[in-house]
Structure formats: structure tokens, C-alpha cells
Length: 330
Image (cartoon, rainbow, N blue to C red):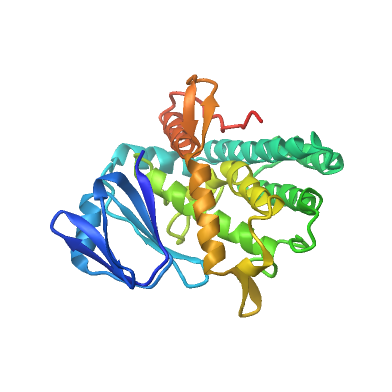
């Protein structure tokens, strides 16, 4: 499996013949391009056109985050799997209201199913989440009544409102309280973790889309507009509960992440460098962790599950097999 490289230090990223290296305060470190799929940059680096050309030739995406861990953008090389046919099929399913609504409903249904799996896990450990789960289930049963994507987005938002209320019961930690969902900036530590984790997941999914014939600019639940990417946001809805949220619960409940891993930024709270490093390391482990895939009957990583999800979507768009979102079994 190809690796993700994370750069937290300041320095230069350069090409030397047929490889690249990073040079910072600790010296020069060569990066084997044949073994990497993406580079996530959190430090201040300088680059030049030669290395961008080299990264493009080797189909490596460069994701940038600012000093506070906010995603700022990607160097997305020219698509090497360009497919006019697939773009037409994506556009067809976007422009046809019934076809778009079907996919959007499936994304929301899958997201809620995985939210219920997370809640079930903690209900079985004695956390009183039954009322929250019931409220979410009642909303899920009305997905078919939604007449447009806007109503679906509102339903999904209401389901998450109930779900987030359960975070305080799951964590029971005065240092990490939910209160309400806040972004840009997050107003407390728990919201800072959710925002940072979701941003990482969006970039990982974008990298996986790059390896398929799909166009990341055409989503179905999230409106395709002047925003550059939307399909990665759709797919992320399925995986946020089982990758990002579960990771947050583990980090807090095991005492791995602490108050000292945060700092104030403007009027909000963000992870500091040590906090970001810890979260990124654990997220990377989570993406590499494997589970037994029931249909394939072999172990696959969470990252590979994301790619399989994209393949299923491709088959749906080509009218081969109706898309069914991944639902965790645990």
C-alpha cells in the first residue's frame, strides 16, 4: 500500500533527478516517490515548478493546511484517468432530479446507518443513548418523503444535531463538551477535533477519487457550483461516523489527547502542533487498519473501503449495479 507523507516542519521540498527530498532544520530527507500517494503539508514550505511537474508525472497530490490546521487547498495534478464518458454520466445523474435525489438519499441513509452503529456500540456499553437513537431513526424513516436535496440536507443536519448531543454522554469529560456545532472557528476543543478530522477525511477521499474515473467537482448531495470539489463531501458523509468520530472518542476516552494539545486562535480554539501531529498519526493508523470485508471475504483497510465505495458509485452511474452505501457491521 502506498503511504501518505505528512510534513509539519518548515523547509524546502525539492526535486533531485528522479526523486524528491525535504530539507529543513533537521537536514535533508529523501522521499521515495514510488511509495507515496499524497503529501499533506502543515509546515511552511517552498516549492518550485520543477517539483510540481515531477509530482504531476508521478500522480502525487499535494494538500496544504495553514498554521492552524485549516485546509487551504490542493495541488491536484492533471487527471491521468480522464474519462469523458464518466463525466457525462455524472452530469446526467446530477441534472436528472430523480437520479440525483436517489443518490443523495442513499448517501444520507448510509450516513445515518453508520451513526446508529456508533450509537449502538456505546448503548451496548451502558451509555443511555436510546432516546437519541430513536429520534434519529424516526428522521431516517422520512428520507423517502424528502422531495428535493435541500430537504434531505436539512434532515441530515437534524439527525446530526441529535447525534452530537450524544457526544457528551459518550465522553462524559468536562474538558471536552460539545455544546453546539461551531466552525470557522470552532469555539471549543471538541468542535476543533471534529473540524480537523473532517478536513483530513475530505482530503483523503479527494486523493482516492483521483485514482478513479470520477470527477470530484460533481457531487449529488452537495450542490455542484463554483466550489471546486463536492463529490468528496458526499462520500465523507458515509465515513465520518466510523472513521473520524470513533477516532475522536478513542483519543479522548484513552486520555491520549489533552487540554494542552489546544491553543486559542482569534475567537476560537484549534489544535496546536503537537495536537495536530498526534491526531494525524492516529488517523493514519486508523486508515491503515483492516477489517474483514463480508463480500470480498478478505481483510481490507479503511482507506481501501473508500476506494471500493467510489467503484460502486461508478457502477451505479454506468447503470450496472445500484449503489449501496457501506454500512459498518459493528
